Length: 128
Image (tube, rainbow, N blue to C red; front, side):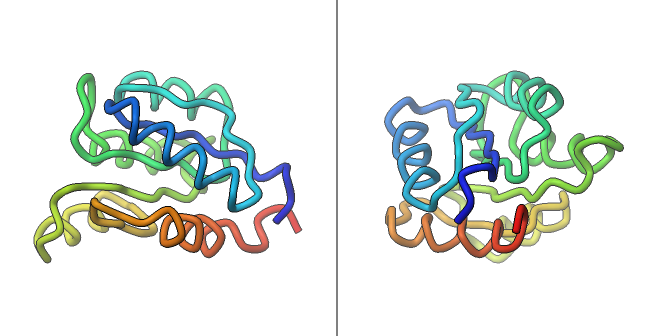
């Protein structure tokens, strides 16, 4: 994977945010911002114009679903890929995430290997 693939990570839990950033780096991508709430995530995505945004669904400021919808509505961010992470794993939760515009939905708890695979799949060919 090319190091120029840029990723924003957003999760309000410090340990999870660090774990996600580790997985993103293991996938060969660069973490351009790691933030703790939805408002910061949206601001970081608009400033950095990443290839992928990894969002926790349940965050203060704005939920991952709200951030995802706002990214999709923006001309500069509409094309970035979005991966939602959530403790909610019901079919309705997944459907809500995909309806908000997410490219993929990964329930918590997840494995680092599973997250690495998901990041690689979503960023394959991005900067090739």
